[in-house]
Image (cartoon, rainbow, N blue to C red):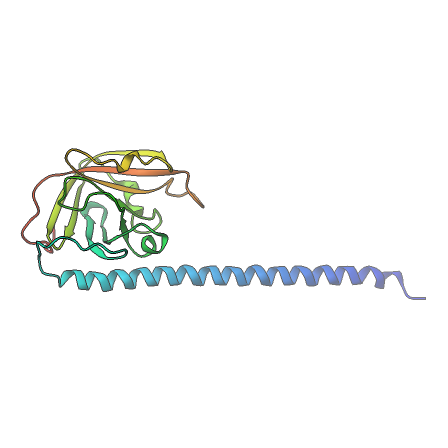
Amino acid sequence: MKPAGGAKARPRRKSAAILRAVSYLFLAVGILALGYAGYVIVDAHAYQAYEQSKFESVSPTHAPYLLVEGGVIGEIQVPRLHLKAIVVQGSSNTILRRAVGHIPETALPGEQGNVALAGHRDTFFRPLRNIRLGDAITLKTPDGAFQYVVESTAVVAAREVGVLTSSDGRTLTLITCFPFNYIGSAPNRFVVRARELVSPSSEPHSAP
């Protein structure tokens, strides 16, 4: 007659094997997630460096923009926050993973109306959590460097599209998800509104 202890040991061994398999699965998922996060960061930095070098070699032009999805429009700078990023046309997930996106159907720099830009809160637009009224923003394009000053900030619902409404003057609106430390799809949007100060400079690539 076999001892009863052997029958009890088999379920324990089976449970231990299952736990090991689950732990290996979670470990593999974690490694894959870290690998993907690293790829996203490296890819974004490489894209920014490449497009920055191309943008700095562009000569000033007065030709109209030929907008295509993913085409480079210029560069945004917020000196006090050390924010500097390439701006491209479009606001898809792929674009926002690599750059700041210009929201279609809104004005372009130098045009009358509201220039609306979107960026991820955990990458390019994360410094906006420290934005202040009166902060200077520079939006550089091949046509010149447009200067703005921050007039207001607000938190709105994710579906609020009124922030994209065109204005009578020349304004700049920056949009990112809120809260900044929220995990997952954030329920709100953080909105920065600025107004244009002066006409574009004649040296679009000089430091502000």
